[in-house]
Image (cartoon, rainbow, N blue to C red; front, side, top):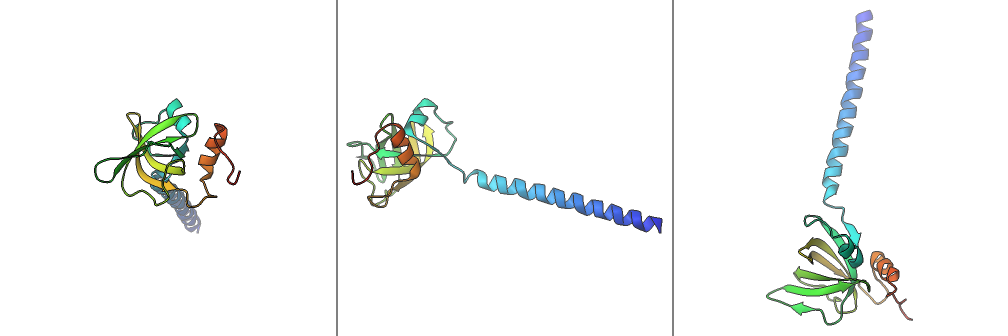
Length: 150
């Protein structure tokens, strides 16, 4: 009878250890899967002050600088984004959103290579009232933001 109790106890410990290992493994896999999906936001001022590593994917936003849009070969477009304090050159290859224009808010996802933000995705505000919160916050910080309708 004593052998049966120790066998049950051993089996219970094995199940607990196995459950713990499975939990740790699944947590690690979820973290690994999310690693590429988490892109930190930076304003142009933050990018200039502390340039990110060239392999770091992040989001940057602000206002498209007036007179900065230059259409290159094919679908490549160059322009500058400002938060009022600093301006960062941007290069993007692809189709820009319909509402993309000078003095309008935008957020891009990409990397910072040799002093230029190489965007892989560009989002523009979708109406007169909306601007991404991060862009509004960075524009307010630099004193450039004007409330809509003012």
